[in-house]
Structure formats: structure tokens, C-alpha cells
Length: 508
Ligand SMILES: [Zn+2]
Image (cartoon, rainbow, N blue to C red):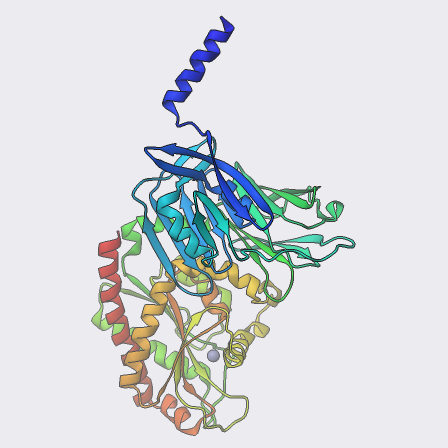
């Protein structure tokens, strides 16, 4: 009787589920591995996770969302279960290609299965054309991940640091050697990362009392690999594992729900209405900003332009409310400016500043439009440092963390939802200011400004001209100059609003 029941069960499963009886050969220099596969209507489907492991390709697997991302050297490949779309993104460039397969992928036994014949060319491209299909076998020709050749002494992974950030938690896994292969997966509040071919000082990695989104960390060495498990709090939304720049460390960013709140906002049209513009006159009060060769103070120019701009909006865009972070010569802390903008529900944040060179007078001339991103050029860094130096006048300067690349990973994540709008507005600004102003454009640039960090909306910072340049300084001091600048910004706002509302109509 017992036998009959199990036979019946077997027959039932056979008819309901496709049978994973096939095996697909994956041939590498290390030998041949067989991965789970099955055939359905003449098409072979294979398990993506086993494929990645057979090739030693880094991957991130989200079991809850049933999504896997394979991380090849130059491309990432995203595959979702029961979905015909595969997304290929290039690393270090903006390339993103979406492919629609003629059939969906499957999800069987907690694994994503993908149709071999339809996906092979895309996978081959992602691999850097190192794969070929030879008489039904997947063959790896070149190297996807360089072979580890080093001989080990002591520990590779020596510790882990946990830092709480506004947008989540940043973990730094400290390693003495370059970790070439790691896989990560997420399931039910546990993020598991496996580092291949590394040895870990396990005792040093234990974290029992939680910090930020990380409730606990446990690590163990398994064979040649290290497995680290991070138990995460309920505020968790997404994570990212990446190699740190300029060191062997691995960075893991764990994002909290600020992002999903933004997504909800995207769904809610009324909250996206273009109804509030925040104008931020840089500096003020005890913080004068730069001082011009003609004696003019940056704080006064900034306020002059801000008030003129505000008046134009109030006159010509009566349905839009103007919020000033300051309307007179007062000192306002940097973090408060973003806070004001958020509390007022701003849809655009414009910070107005004036530029200067360390040596005065100098020939440098023109205006610049800045976006918030890590400033890579020495010039962008020095301008960001000068504008951020306002903090020295504040009562609790220690609340501002150093804007390192790591902080930027988190900060720009928060801004990514608005980045496309910030870029578009910068574009309108740069063009309009170039037409209307008597001083030249120096282009659209990127740097790390604290004042832009806090504002959760499209935001830009404008350096209107050089106070260290005699001609620029006189232009900025004059009401003709200030009117031209305000007028150009206003026209750019009008163009931006048109664009913004059109996008909102089609996207929402
Ligand atoms: Zn300034």
C-alpha cells in the first residue's frame, strides 16, 4: 500500500512538473561539470545558478524576488523567474539592453531555468564571447574569472566594519587579498555572501549586537571558501555587493526603506505635481562666502539673485509656491536647507552661489551648473570643499560625515530617482544661461555638495560667476547682471516644467 501511494505521487509529480532529468555539460579548463536541465517542447532549459557556479561567475541571487544577477567582467546579466525579459548592463558605462525571449524562464525546485537556445547569444556576449556551444555542451574558452594562483599564509579577511548611514548601512569587509569571486543571495532576512578561495579570521567577524539594518553577523570557513551571513532588520529593501576602489575590501550596501518610499511617491501623482520651488541663496550672516575683487560679498549676490528669481516665479507662475531657505542676511545651517526643502515638498531645489579662485585677481571666468555626484576632477573637489566649508560656522560640525566615495554610494542611490530630472534641468539651465548672460558657460559639472545631499528632489547648484575675476565680479554685483541670471534661471524653469509635466503624464 505504501509503495502504491508513493508511486501514485511520483506519477502525479511527473505530469504536473517538468522532469529535471537532463543534465547539461559545462566544460572549462578545470573539467566538465553537469548542471540540472530539462527539456520542454524540444527546448532545453538549464539552472542559472548552477551554470554560474560551474563557471565560477560571481552572482547575486534574491530567492524572495526570484531574481538572479550574473556578474561577468564587463557585463551584468539580470534574469527573473517566469519572465521572458533578460537585461544586460555594461559596467562603467550606461549601456543597458533588454532582450525578450520567445518563452519565459521557469522556477522549479527553487531554481530559475532559462531556455538555452534563446539565451545563449546574450550569455555569450555577457561573458565577453568566451563561451561557445559545441555539440550540446557549453564550452568556456578564455577566462571569465582569472585563476587564483597565490599561496596563502594567514587570513585574507581580517574584519568587518559596520556604518550607519541615512540611507542604509554600509559594511566593509576588510581583506588583505583581492577577492575575485563571491556570490551573494538573499532569503528571508538573511543575506548570505560566499567568498571563494579566502580564509577568514572568523572570531573577529562576529557581531552579536545589531547596528543599523544589520542585526547580527556570523561567518564560517567552509573548505576553501568563507560564508558570511548577515541577518537584516525589516527595514531592509535592497543590497549591493561590490569591490571597493583602491583596496582589496568588499563593500556591501544595505539599503533601507527610504527608497521604497520614493517608489511609492512615484506612484502617487498628486505628490509629483510641480507646485513648489525651493530657492537656496548660498551662505548668509556670519558666513559671507567668497569676497570679490571689487569688495562684493558672495552672500549678497546669492540673495540678490534668489529674490529676483523668486519674484519672477511669483509673478509668472502663480500656481507655484516659492520657498526661500533664507530671505535676508541670516545664517542657515546646510542640513537645514535640505530639511526645509523636504518639509515644504519641493519639486525643484536651486542653490545659488558664486565662484572664486584661491589667487585673486585671476582670469577664470564664467558660470557653472553642478549636479550632486562624487567630484572626480581636482577643480570640482576644491569647489566642493570651499562651498562645504560653511560647516565650520555651525554649532555641531561633526554631524556632517566626510563625503567619501562610500558615502556617495549611499547618497547618490537616494538621488538616483531624481538624477534624470536634475540632469535635464541642468541642461536647460546651461543652455539658457549661455544665451542670456554676458559671461560664458564653463559647462555642467559634478561635485559633492552637502547642501544638495539632504534635498529629496531634483536639485542643482549654480556657480554664477567668478568673484575673483574683475569683469565677472562687476557683472555679478550689478542689478543688470543679477536680473539676467534670474531671468535665465526662470526661463530654464519654464522649459523644465513643460518637460517634467509631459514625463509625468506619460509615466504615471
Ligand atoms: Zn558659495
